Amino acid sequence: MKGKKLSRRQFVGHSLAVSAALSYRNILGANDRITIGMIGCGNRCQGSLLKDILEFSRETNVEVAGICDTWRQMREKATEQVLAATGRKPSQYIRYHDLLATGVDAVVICTPEHQHCTQLIDAIRAGKDVYVEKPLGMTMDEISAAYDVVKASDRIVQNGTQIRSLPAAQAAKRLIAEGDLGVIVKAEQSRNGVRPFWYGYAERQVSRSDVDWEGFLMNVEKRPFDPKQYAGWYGFREFCRGPHTTQGLHFIDLVQYITGAGAPQYATAHFSQVHFKDGFTVPDSVEITYQYPEGFLVRYGQFFGNGSGRYLNIYGTGGQIDCSNWSWNGQWKLSRNQAVEGEAFSGKDLPQVEGTPHMKNWLDCLRTRQQPIAPIEAGHAHAVAGILAEEANLRGRRMVYLPDLRKIREA
Image (cartoon, rainbow, N blue to C red):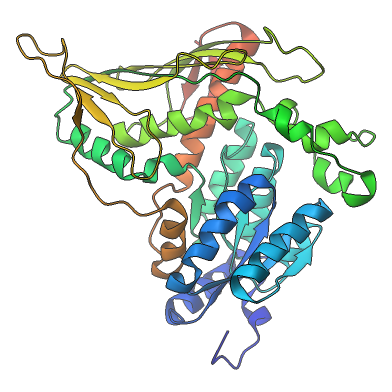
């Protein structure tokens, strides 16, 4: 770092003791540039996460110093994106361990779902702050392990559930906290599409010589190279549980954030392959119902084959909020039709409030050392919801989450 006589490597190690020293350096060196490494550089990274970092890099004084991906073309495209925006060419890495061994201060994890917890734990132990995409993980054991490692450190961890950072979400949270929606009784989303989103990914052409197949598999059972699984991992349950974790957890996290609730208490679920039966193993239709300790119900439904019937509403005894518009400047509408006897109006926009973009919130927190808007507690809670629904579907029973034990059992 500029103005420093000591090598950056002196501050970086693979223990929490070194992590504490790195935190102290960040506080003292608030005017110094923070270096960031990107782990996983596919479409989501290039089109959103890396793009956001580059947009806010001058304002927050950060630099993308490392690019890591098991797919050569993705590494090269992300590298060119950084070079074009900054005039500086970051170093490239195939294995994430090699990136963690460098002096970067923080990493962004944007990899397949089966890799998240392992990479998060390794990054924390290497003394890095972390932005990790959702879901936090795929099993209770791994999300509990990740939670414990993060909580035992002083690292700043942001989960990639960016919908909670929208100005409209801030307005809805304030409205509910002030009691203007009455008692929350239900929230539900229907999120449908003509074709499963994993098809577009799986159709990408990939050659064995261009990828580190073993690095991609990580802890998953070894098997011969399969380009369809590599490019279209969203469609295979070993790497992704399905649309309820890839897309549905944005909704679940939003509900938990604006209501102030933690993880759900109960879940029932039914997953099915109704129409798209061509080698993929994730469901194309899901129906989930949750009950929260606070008493309200949450329903999430999604199917592919028809894009009609999309909505997202939160209902209280004092009205309902239409939360469908997820654009940055999108307005959510408050309606009181039939909510309160003798009182009816609809279509009123929630009052506008300011918000901070999700990535910028994390970048700011790297310096202030304050907790970001989606800390590890939020990541653990949304992951519990996804796993609870998974277990309910597999067992065909109502399942209960026991927070004191961090266990899921039959109700």
